[in-house]
Image (cartoon, rainbow, N blue to C red; front, top):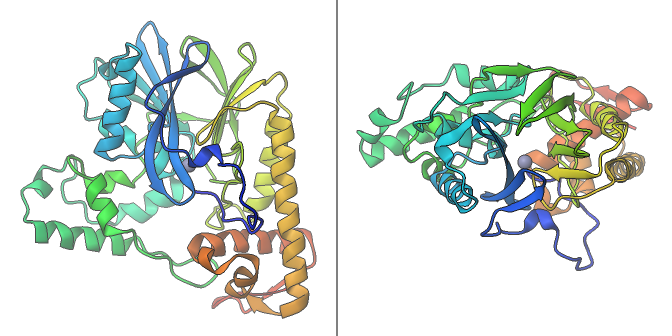
Length: 373
Ligand SMILES: [Zn+2]
C-alpha cells in the first residue's frame, strides 16, 4: 500500500526509489537473493519488489505482487532471465495482508507446479479482510470460468456489486469508498475477481520468533504491526539481511492504518520500529518498495521522528480548532490533494495515540468521534 502523503515536499527533491518504474532486469542483491521489480499502479509507488530464493527443491518468493496478468508475466519473464522456471516455485511468503503483496499468489496457485505452493504469512494474516469477504457473492468459487461465460454487462454488474460491497464503516464515523471497478476488471482476467483482493488461505501460519527455511537459510520472523496488524519482517544474522516488507522503506514513511484490531496502531508501530532496531548484525534491508539500504536502526529512528513531528503538528492544530472530528484535523494536517480515506485513517491513528499517551479527549461516541487536544 502507498505511503501516507507528506506535507514537507514543497521543494523539488531527488526521485524516491519507491516511485521508480520496474527495471527490466532481475538483480542479485545479496548472495542467492534475486530482486524482481513488479509493476503496480498505486499512488506514490512505481513497483513492488518480489524476492526470489532458490534451494534444492525449487524457488521461494517473497511478496509476489499484484494479482494482475501483467505482473505475473513480468515475474515469469524475470525469473526465466536468471534461469529460474516459475513452475518450480514451492513457497510464497506474504509480508502482510495488502493486495500489492499477496495478489500474485492467486496466479501461482493456478500454475501446474511440481508441488502445491505453500503459503507463509503471519498467523493473523488478513484477519479483518477475511470477515469482510466471507459474505461476498463468489461467482466462481474456485476459478473464473463461470465469469468468463458471462456477458460483458453481467461481468460489469457483478464487479460493481463486489466493489460496492467493499465499502466499510470506519472507526471515525465515515464510510470508505468501494474499489475501482476498472482496476478489478483488468486485474481479474483469468482468475476469480475476489482473489485479486481477498487474502489467500495460509498453509503455514507464522508466529513471532518462528524460523522459516528459504533459499537454504533459516529466517527468523519478527511480528511488526503498525502498517498492517499482520506485518512480518524476516531476518538472517549470518547473511546480515532483513526482509523489511513495508515496515521499513528507504525514503517514504509507511501508511499507518486506523483500521486495526489494536487500540493503538501508531503505538504498535513505534514498538515495531524499536524491535527491528534491536536486531543486531543487519547490514542490508530488502524492502518491498524501493532500493535496498543499510542501517535499519537509523532508518527506524528517522521514521519514528517523522511521526513525532506529525503528532506535534496535530497538537498545534488542536490549539487552533478545538473540538473537531477526524476530518477537521485531516484537512489541516494534509494538503487538499491528499484528502481522503488514507489521510483520514492515518490522522485517526495519530489522534488515538494522543488520546492514549497524551491528554487528548474523545467525545461524541457512536457517531463521529470528536477530539480535543
Ligand atoms: Zn506495499
